[in-house]
Amino acid sequence: MASMKTIVIGSGGREHAIAWALSRSPSVDEIVCVPGNGGTASEMKCRNLPVSGADAPSIARACLAELSPSDGGFVVVGPEDPLAAGIADLLQSAGLRVVGPRSAGAQLEASKDVAKRFMAKYGVACADSKTFDDPADAIAEIERINGPTVVKADGLAAGKGVVVAPDAKIASAAVRDFMVSKTLGGAGGKVVIEEYLEGEEVSILAAVSVTPELARDGKAAIVPFVPARDHKRLLDGAKGPNTGGMGAIAPAQGVDEAVLARFRADILEPTLRGLVAEGFDYRGFIFFGVMVTSDGPKLLEYNVRLGDPETQAVLPLMDFDFAELCAAIVDGSISSFSFKWKAGFSCAPVAVSRGYPGSYGKGYPIAVDRAAVAAAGAQIFAAGAGAGAATGKLVTSGGRVLASSARGATVEEARKNAYAGLAAVSFEGMTYRSDIGLPGAAVSGNLLSSDAS
Ligand code: AMP
Ligand code: GLY
Image (cartoon, rainbow, N blue to C red; front, top):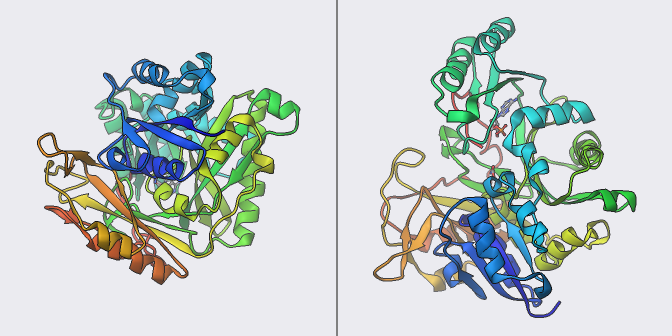
């Protein structure tokens, strides 16, 4: 597969890491990032392609103008929205090879109710829950439980749809916000009221190759990557508001072989059986958001994509060719693919704009001392960073601006290298946590009132 052209859909740090991983493959000679960001604009072999609209048909048209079925390349879809809207269906029916599930499978992330029904139907270990479409019934259930609960809006809500409520008053208020005041629009039409679970969270990203044909041939498979851990709170010590993710470490500490064995038996295998039984064409990635409780690992959520910022920490640990993995996902050969992971750890702290996750300024120039980044052995993965119109230089354009990702033989060394990479970057209002990867840094001691995925 020499001289292959690939496309990456999305504009975040995850997509920069995916494009970077593809750029290192000798079989890939061009990566078109649709629309990409200020980091992918200058990444080796990469080119950004602006799109007229953010809707799936516009993105699909842009991809089809770039890649034809006879080129042998493929499209990797980064974020969940285009997947839920059927981008994989559109591209596949035009003959392109796509890494990302069709819309039916993407409902496992797009609807919490669909996900919970799937978990129950196939016996996936998870928190007990009930779904309601009437706020009075939801509040009656909350009052019956009369303790901590988790209130989840059914639909995609860009991380604003989950409230971990310490008591019935806060949970009921969340139900009224979602269902009566409709603070999330249509996403709050139904709510899931879920049992509150205590423990340490872990993100297990995995490659998935499931189609009815592969299942018939015994080749349907889900292969997990090294476990990772996100740090969702804004401040050191897991304090402050929740964010989209302030940094990640991989492999996640405390996730030993016994935990992974139970994860495989109680979560991964039932999920695979379910994807097969539903007859899905699901060839892409899946993200298991898992709480490791005293009663074993329990699934909190599925995402139908790689995690952000977990990807920025996990992909640098690959000791295999990412483009070959993408081809194996599409062709259905992941069960025989040779997954090898580098020894040691990878740490990826995120630099955010001051004010995030609330309001923040944009358009500040980002200075990067490339020599110092290289000396630290770090990679900068841009997220909310665009190219300035006047200068073409990097400027801030979002809340989570970039991540510095680096490996090390130990957690301490990975942290030291990653933070040395971050120290080589500066922009007005640059803010970051200093404890990404430290043991316990992702665990909050108190119940929170709002949460983000
Ligand atoms: P989700 O989008 O379902 O992963 O929820 C977002 C975040 O809310 C998770 O990453 C957890 O930190 C928290 N969360 C979700 N469900 C629960 C639960 N049942 N118990 C405790 N925390 C939860
Ligand atoms: N890091 C959590 C997510 O990607 O949803």
